Image 1 (cartoon, rainbow, N blue to C red):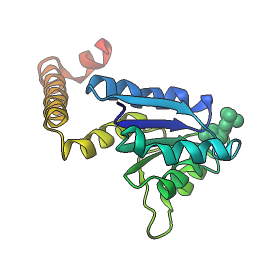
Image 2 (image 1 turned 135 degrees about the vertical axis):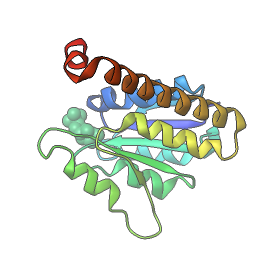
Image 3 (image 1 turned 120 degrees about the vertical axis):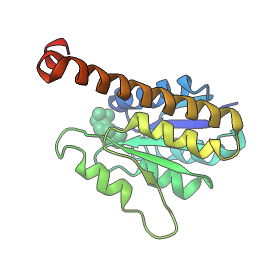
Length: 170
Ligand code: RP5
């Protein structure tokens, strides 16, 4: 049963949203992933968002670019958290989508991550699920510990060989 629904407005969003899927897989979280444009196929979108709760989905990650209404409309229809991912897109470098997704009216929040922040969207979704799932919580703690160790290794290497040699080896 999918715990997370990943939805995006176009296949042009797939490179970014694929990073969300990769991270959910790394954390062992079941998900379903689809492309539905709120603008180009509104009826299909409505049916998908209304059916999500019944499929066991607890968090939706919605990515969209340009006049990005998909995450906000998910939040209007789905009663649990929605994480929005603004796409950098073609013309306004994602500022259009960022403003569109983050500026929700009172009562309909979307937890908006950075432009093209697919990976962080998955981590945030996992953290939401971890409030009631010990297995996911332990996986997140393990992920954080590994991240910390990686940075510590880099610091130790820099201190050992100096910044010039470090840059040459990058
Ligand atoms: C949005 O329009 C999509 O999320 C996508 O980011 C953007 C452009 O879509 P395409 O023209 O690439 O299909 O709805």
